[in-house]
Amino acid sequence: MNAARIIAATIIIALAPAVCRAQSAPAADPARATIAPGTHITMQNWRDYRPFMPDGMAALFEGKYHWKMPADVDIEVGPTIIHPLPKTYLAATEKYSAQVKLVDLPGGALTISNYRGGLPFPNPADPHRGWKVMANVWYRYLPHIFVDTYGTGCMENGYGSINCTVDEIVAKQLSFNTDPGVPATTPGAGDKFYTEWIMTLEPENERYSASLVISYADLRKSQDVYVFVPALRRSQRVSTAARCTPYPGTDATSDDYRFGFNANLTEMQAGDMGKKKMLALVDATPPATRFPEGYDMPLGWPKPSWGKWQVRDVDVIDVRKIPSLAAGYCYGRRVMYVDSASSAPLWEDLYDANLKPWKFYAVFLSTIDVPGIGPVNSNGSAVEGFWDIQNNHSTFFSDPGQGHPFYVNGQAPAQYNDLTRYSTASGLDMIMR
Image (cartoon, rainbow, N blue to C red; front, side, top):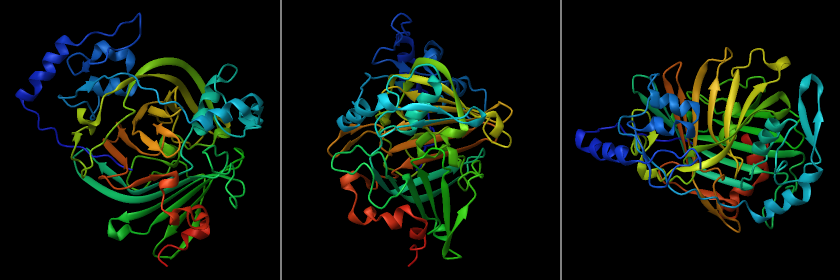
């Protein structure tokens, strides 16, 4: 779950090549709205490429907050590589998407009916285009199971102090599956859509603390959240009203889970802010080292060794609670930059209840060759960076961390197929037995 960073020990000699590249880097071509492969974006020329950045990234370059781009930042642009969505997922999209309908709910809320799998809105259009893009994010392709054996989460305060935790994570999609050889609905799963089981491995004094989030096939049904408390040796239910409670010590709330979005769609409205081309790191190879090694510090930005950036087509949406439910909610707005090819969030600008910038949230995706599917960007393996610009705090999740195993679908060892253990509240009570 976490990412690592290295304290930038940059010297003049190291900066010299970057300066040369900055002088020779070609400017963006407005007519083609792209950036030529081979371009290096640095502190010297970043303003030429501002149109290709989300607002939060540009703010980090501007240096207007405590968190800012390191002087040696070097974003090398490569060719845009689109990995096709799985054939079976596309087949489900073609078969079922025409029957998906929007349904009005009280208070201006929306839900959908007749969804059976695949992308619900392959060509989102008005009315409610923004909400349809949001629904595509919720139902985007993910492997039906992924197991992160060593997900790391590292937190840094404004004074440079760092502490890290390690979790084991098991996520399962139990309804609307399209993977070959897998039932659309997992036998015994009932009305569940998706479950995410997390157990702490390190530090030792937090070991065995665990949580389970259950999402349901009916969007109108609220998630169930359970935690296992080692001292009590039993699980207990958590109020779903606590959507703004951060994961202990981090900058991520429950609504930030699932790699960028875990809110109840029936409680959200989404305005359409249009399409744009945006720089993104979607084929990242993060360092298999201990945090903060391999990251460009003190920001914790990806180093060039992570891979080349791409210019991606994104849909930009403004997600907010419907007015009748907005009181007391932590985020006044969530501006999401959604990859048009995979429907995965690539960046988010998060605002507080007073609509002031609060956090910048980046998702750097790793590509995995999913058995029977092929290369997939949106697969559960990623580095996520949160920069809290109001409290000078940051969080980095790396899935997996330090080169540990990460399994998808048929790669997962047999014990992780245990539906009771990893997808029910009673399964939490099996911990420590």
